[in-house]
Image (cartoon, rainbow, N blue to C red):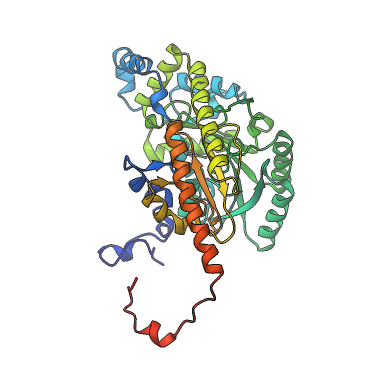
Length: 433
Ligand SMILES: Cc1ncc(COP(=O)(O)O)c(C=O)c1O
């Protein structure tokens, strides 16, 4: 079988590998083009506010990298990553309750790349990944690109529900499918913003252990808490059954493209081989810049600054929702970048998006975060990038759109449905409307 990706205008249409059928442009990606127009308030992307970084300290780190370590920084490096940075990553990890050895750390090109490598190591066509419902859109895309199926298990305000997880696992197993891992974003989840409680972390790990399922713990936002730190990472409870993914993208800068995996020994060895096969070695330059930055700057203080910036933006968004859309419901995140909004039934966030963009506000429709078409009533609202005033204006515009939709629905619900006359419909040209 050949892939279906492409069009008849593409002379290689019939040649793509079957796995490329899963590589449709994501809703987030399509949005970036539209939402980047300056007049649009974008509540869509997950871009950190890098302007809050200390410019001078970054420049110093880059200068020192070139002047003092140029020969190493401009050269190929180890497939596992720069040893000094791996030690510093362990300092970051200690803040999440993880204590390990530098040998356990594999540096990757962002945690997205770690997701790709782990998928390559574990997923055969038809395998199942169990993920929170909803879950991170580009993880779903990666799993799909390896022809694996993402099966969602429900969440509530305390994160993934353990009993529902037991039922999801039983159902998938009864269908004769193989579950390869449980993919979780336990702290300030993307897209819901909720955090898995400590009790549930323990219980879910027990479930995974007893079912023989590897846990993939993806934690880009854990250090970006507003009041109280989230519970320690699941990896702190189990070194054999959990692969942990971390990144400098949200606490420093995504442009550096440096993330990491901390994995059980056997998996770590395979990860290094897969890393080498894919990219030879992660960027020495970026790794050394980060290492220099951590050496010379107050990186913990900088993360505190980010917390303050995002807390203020979260507050602006919640207050604006309360003012303009009091009849909707939404999550209240204690960290991270995202609020998850639930609209009344019959509203469709995906269908509504073009009208929202016309009103100069963008969001990510809930359906982007499900592999199974769910999420129509939901949308993800990001508060990370726009300044508080823009957030308030964005929510005001969004309220205009949602209230307009509700008014329209109200009008139509008073009218009997129009009869469809097949003969009339048939005479319409195929692309009418
Ligand atoms: C849950 C989650 N995992 C992974 C990533 C990818 O991050 P990176 O920039 O480290 O590749 C993101 C980015 O938004 C994310 O939200």
